[in-house]
Image (cartoon, rainbow, N blue to C red):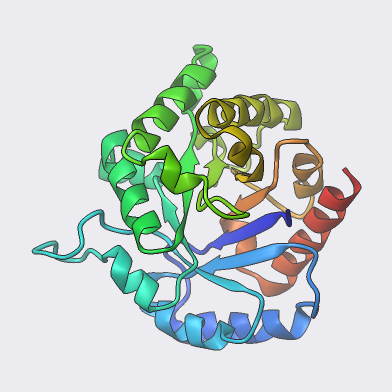
Length: 260
């Protein structure tokens, strides 16, 4: 399976800035890319970016979603709205949503269910804080997040087709936007546990779930990460905001994945 590179722009770029980025990216992007790429702009640019990506191999992603179909939820957005805009992926459970907006594993599970129910693929984020890592609780915390989130989704809904409708991103909270990065062996240790956890629940379909690393990913460190056997791509924040840097990152990740 092709590695997956996801650009999470967070709260950056106006519509005009987003379209300028996409124009430059499409000029730089190869006709036959060696990796899959998804762009997650802010909600205000989703429709415009989706139109600019039409006819290209680059996928549209959303940064968040509400778990309900509709209702009195001012400022929120439903999965069916995102599907209507042509989103292929939706980021769910990002650590910033957990820590700053109080999202629980149970709520994240409902979001997973909503995204899958509308034919999109969630990019489901899990990861530990620095305090949890220093206490030796990394695998326990990630296991709790996995069990709490996937508990809302029937395994049968995840095992159909060549590519199960699920991507998991391991993003240690202490490495996000800090310039600190987990060592490749630390990342592989967690990814191997996640893979085994999926095997126990999904059987052979677990081998086709792409596991991404997120946390201060740059062109300088992405190759070492994606050379690990259970790392199938990256979720990128700051390094995704410049088109030239992002293409360089994609090229290095693809070469690393192809040679590993």
